[in-house]
Length: 513
Ligand code: 5AD
Ligand code: SF4
Image 1 (spheres, rainbow, N blue to C red):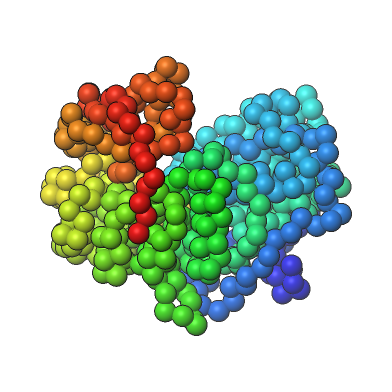
Image 2 (tube, helix red, strand yellow):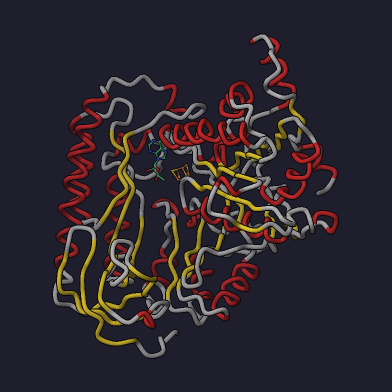
């Protein structure tokens, strides 16, 4: 870490929150130890200042974990899941061993999600449970990391009321885990390390991947879209892309290790490369190179319709290992609501994009994210969401009731939609989502599909489970030797959210362009 970063860092030794401070003293004290990511500064983001660094475990910490176990509980999106893989890699590098029981753990981390209020409530509930554990075993270290740690109100609340917590660190500070642990061992006080700066790019991070069939690869971090409801641009920092050569090397390495499916990850992957000043290079260019790597399946998530350009569509239409499932969050079918959400496209522009993608990739299937009950959303505007859903013919959706997030512009909006109405809209939308999913599944009845076999089915170990190219879950009878392979399955029964079938054959070598 260089001096500049050190200055920008918020590394503090916070006095133990059990100190009885008055409200006023507390606010003063809090301001002195924590500067939150600022909404104003975040909006003024410049292109400069992203630093690329290589990670290495400091020599002096290499035995830190000897005889100790770590446990990480992950909440939220794939980005968080992948961050957990990185933190697990760092723990292993420090000599710790993993455990899947909190009782056995010497270090417990909660990798948190801030996207909606209920995600946060779960974490506070879990911290309540962990209090008993800490009382029984005061030596256990408890840490809170991930998106919630980047929120001022959360850090404040933890400092005030959750003194069982030993460490709080942000999404930009993961590579600092060895130092944060060391501080926590050395000190009786809560260690807080949350950087308000916009984040750098750290390469060579170790990873313990969840399996050996599918892998995530970050291509970029952060988001500059500032949709008015969303906390992500504040918790994840500004958009910054990894260099193409680093990504390609990682994917090649995964291919050589025998991985069958890669998902390229970013909050807004279509903005990939926009921050490069020396080269003109976007997601289309990256996918065009990655598709030549000998790996059978490549996915990417999450897309923003605004940045989904023609070059990417052209590259995706080449097919091969580029899968034809497009997850394209629309959020609302009403142009007025989209405007208030600051999504920067209209209903018509979204439909036009879908039309273009369908023309280039006729067998493309679409899924989406939708928020209902946005402040002041009218019945008519909600009906427009339903009609857009039908018009696109989505095959699945993640649906949410709007949840105000402190610090976002929408949280300040007056809202005249009662919760009852929001819930009713969600139910109506979900009924449509189920109907369309069932209809999409029906099309596979008696068809033969390609399935990447992931393992035994969760509900029945006699049955294998895997996914089709467009992400449909398939359960089927087949030999255990098929796990990790691509097989052909004939569909015998189509349900609302999954397919049942019989394995026909193992696929021969997959042809990659
Ligand atoms: N309330 C409800 N849903 C939200 N999402 C993001 N922020 C909020 C919020 N404040 C949803 C969006 C996004 C998905 C990941 O979560 O649909 O695409
Ligand atoms: Fe949030 Fe996605 Fe909008 Fe970025 S593009 S602000 S991550 S909803």
